[in-house]
Length: 239
Ligand SMILES: CC(=O)[C@@H](O)[C@H](O)COP(=O)(O)O
Ligand SMILES: NCC(=O)COP(=O)(O)O
Image (cartoon, rainbow, N blue to C red):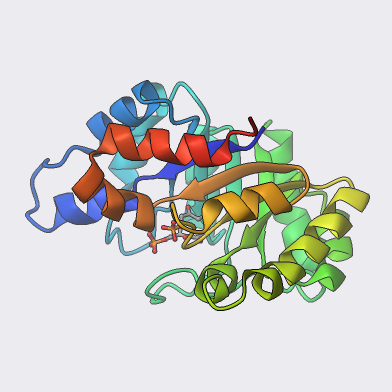
């Protein structure tokens, strides 16, 4: 079964546009879980452009499904995650000024660095996942860091899905096969949508979780949040 973790960064983006509490990030998390969402993902960035440190702490007691915190492991991020203790931390190597995440880790080059950080999270009982481009040759080094999972960075798949979905998914399939061989769990995310999700979930072997935000919150403007969450769950259902 592939779990749906809803990324609520965009709820915070909208809230921050007016500086008040509307729409409420905590209420969104509660509702998404009521509607069937199986996890809540956030990506607190150092400039707090959407999710703030306060949000992270406010959300912790309200996330009764699976709390996934994404981010570049600067010391302040590491300290916050160790303090909050979510179920999962996803390490993403994005520059502070990046508009959004735009690359996975070079796990060969950063193997020692990642190994050290991952050990800290593992000692605290937090599952670890490494954001990774669909490059099978990097999987071996991801496994050597001690990470529990990889998160496949799906922007390229989403971009090329409509023109040639078989070609678009090939590197992801190959990377997933390698991850299965090395005993790594597989998550995926970035630009997944109602349109491109089903083929991805049906093709990738042992896909454990997808985290989806931008498209889901955009689609919810027209379809409503409950209907949208449930439509995603249907795309992930195997029957
Ligand atoms: C790790 C990743 O792929 C992200 O999609 C990310 O969490 C989105 O961040 P923004 O919402 O800041 O674009
Ligand atoms: N890890 C990916 C994520 O949380 C959401 O990415 P997106 O759907 O906002 O592109």
